[in-house]
Image (cartoon, rainbow, N blue to C red; front, side):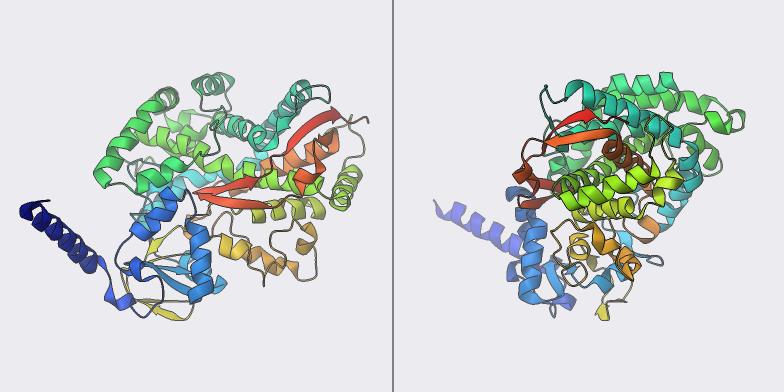
Length: 491
């Protein structure tokens, strides 16, 4: 290496050092953490990308070393104290979403990518009516219809004399098609989405959210190009949605009867006086977001619930006996949602599935607008703060034996106090808009599966094998696959 090249290399290193020093926030120096994390975000990016979703694992290790508040970046703090969660995310929180955390989605127009809390509230009021408790109740028959079709398909393709199904991948098509049908009840519209791919399996690989980490760790200009490219890759989906959006835009909201209204009609009706720019693309983006926001966050809890029930004869007996008492005659109509919601053991099974699945496991970071207090600690303005859901759901003091499937924990005296630590749908103004719909799908699917079907795992040991959760935005189950056969129960 000649002198000029060596000098150039030194200048580049000095420049990088100076940049990271300037990026570091000295006001956070009192908080412990890895020395390298003070100066660069590369420490975090290494675990997210090179170590493939190991960031939350590393954060757990750091909290064991350093305590309840850890500095994990030049301007970023992570909390493990459950009290901090409410301060960051609950009702009354005015913190904006962190642009770096959400860089992979901010170029889209849907609610999830909106950073400003006030704008998000405006958008939320447009979407929420379609997923209200009443709206979901009125459309429960659609979900029941999809459940019946799904069980018939399981019996047809995966009976005892046929190939077993891999449970983790078998659930996603059901939730994907059900979400599409719920958003667009019209048969022709739903058929258009099914043939476009919107209502198909989410992906064919377990690495379904790796793109999130790749895109959020790249330069914003590259992200913009890639998100545009990604939209084009999903051309058939977006085209189908934009055609439906254009059709909805041509009709007056008042001309559409409530019973015939689809997701787009409700959005247009609620946004008549304050509509986002490029309304056709906005509508398509919101609809596409239903798929990505709703499929894994419902399929994963049901996977853990089925795995947990089949892994314990005691749990299986309690659940099936409760369902038999509520639904003694299989030839009669299925219990409605209101009836299922009153079944304590079924509800406990769903809650335990939600707890173990974590939901979005990546810390959903916020930016402190002005000096504030979080969990009793002074936090200066412009600090990025966050807390992974796993620190709530797997906290051993709140949930003893946190990795064990135990529905009974939700049925003990004063167990309702545990509900505030179940944050799979988040909390506060940015909580999941489709929460009632998610509960509806889980209630109906699990009740029908365990009442109507005999379920045979190919290996009982696989149901009780240890597992690990990988951080691919939502949690990804890493462990023994669960393979099942099915047979219809006799009345």
